[in-house]
Image (cartoon, rainbow, N blue to C red; front, side, top):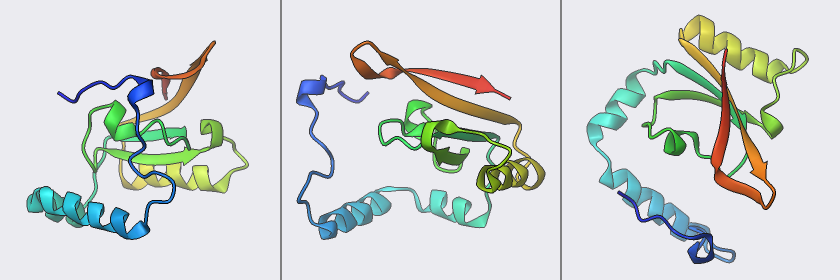
Length: 128
């Protein structure tokens, strides 16, 4: 299990001033540490059972907070996880997810702010 950090101990994984080259090295190291079978399966097809509509927020990585793997979710993110009949992007995502991918669940996920701001633990999910 990963060590839980107190916010005062948090150090960004990609700090200001960091070279993009270091990020590319980290990506290569990550890719080399993964199972080749995972990449082969992901390249062949995608068949997620869940469409996740969430906020464009760097603090809420959906597969992390749900403890899922790449390919388990079909994801759409926008500011404030808005679903509007006037937004062709979200309408296209929903249509593709339901008609082509045959997702079984649609989750619209928002987060709550405590009186001191985002606490990173409180999410509200709506199943559609």
